[in-house]
Length: 188
Image (cartoon, rainbow, N blue to C red; front, side, top):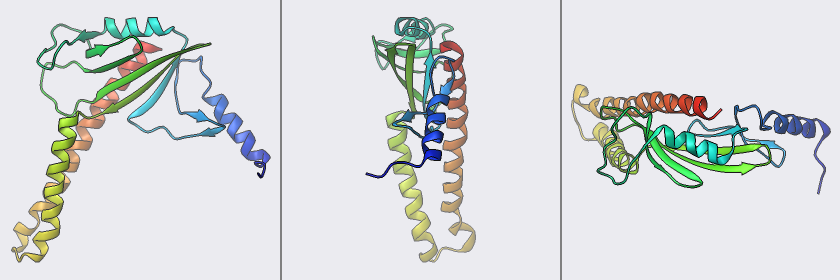
């Protein structure tokens, strides 16, 4: 097996050092000397706090739900469930927003504190509904040009596609950023 060039090894070491824990910053994964880009919906928070401290902070800021029909009350920032090593929460709001990300976090304790691995995604039903809706719109985009519709009405599926993309991207990005900022603030 061929050895890696020195400049690559130095870059990998620098990447691994940049991702070293202890300063409480959000960082990308450094695995096997390689640094992977962090995806916007998945990130890691390294902190000096213990696992128990982190989970207590999450519990203190989360309205614990007991069923699907349990609607959160009060002034807590999140709602959801917290277990002994993980949490599944979403931002608590007093209005309906289907694009709120579900925040799934796992907490692992290590020698220097804890690592919180966070994954954000849309609710399963919303993802399913959008898949069906976008499938229909894309099918219409492919069929309408060949179906002989007059020009203004032939543009409708393309406008629906653009509208749908904007409807998903803008609110989801906004809500993801709000939740991420609050988690960073609480857990550092």
